[in-house]
Image 1 (cartoon, one colour):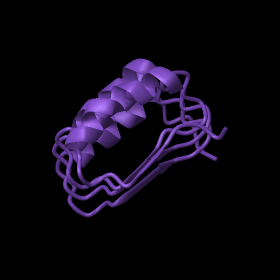
Image 2 (cartoon, helix red, strand yellow):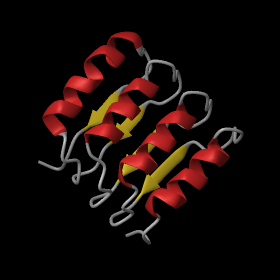
Image 3 (cartoon, one colour):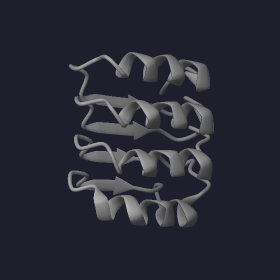
Image 4 (tube, one colour):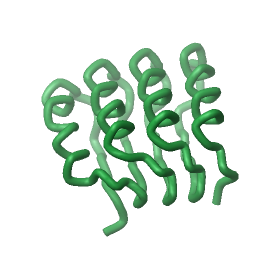
Length: 118
């Protein structure tokens, strides 16, 4: 489980990822509630980060379509992320999958993409 990291915490983490070159695995457990703003901040950081290979959201991350779309767009530039788990709180599973359609044509490194627990 996770403390409520929230969008503010996710944004602070994203700022650190812009210069960090050693962290490879980020797992935000249940209840982090980063929302679309937190997911968008992490997505922006992933555009230039060269070390993170795994990003996982737990349940109740409150990431909707806007956050999922930002993550999808980041994959067009990110060449290091191998696994992305959007957790089970994603309310945009159908539209979210569509958002990844173009990005996955461009991205050649992602090997695992998970939407929900179902």
